[in-house]
Image 1 (cartoon, rainbow, N blue to C red):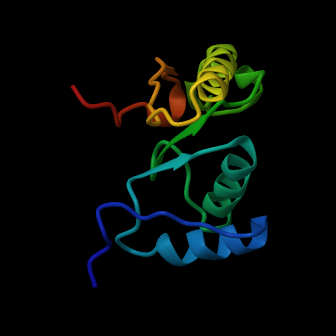
Image 2 (cartoon, rainbow, N blue to C red; image 1 turned 180 degrees about the horizontal axis):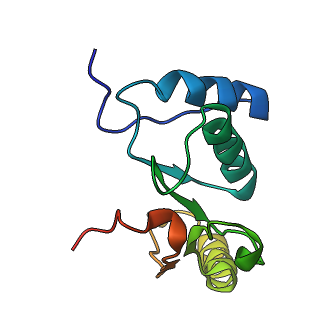
Length: 127
């Protein structure tokens, strides 16, 4: 069976996530993993280690809002940084708007994030 182009793993705890990742890391496993939080990044990195795979050689790896001291991790983790302060400001603005106009249509606010390319995606970058 061919692996889907995208696979989303969910779980209630690290062990459950690691088991799900272990089953996905078969012969034709993923070429890249993106963890949406620091705890998920830790579970994914442990899952890769359990499977005797390394990043970036076997699987490219990135995380959101990564570790404060990326130089402590080897290889260094590629990280997508979200604008936390701007997210808070936008949330308060949306709340105030909703309180002023309870019947107004919901709206979406998109904020700019940045990506800090590091070693876990070396050799896997497009272009």
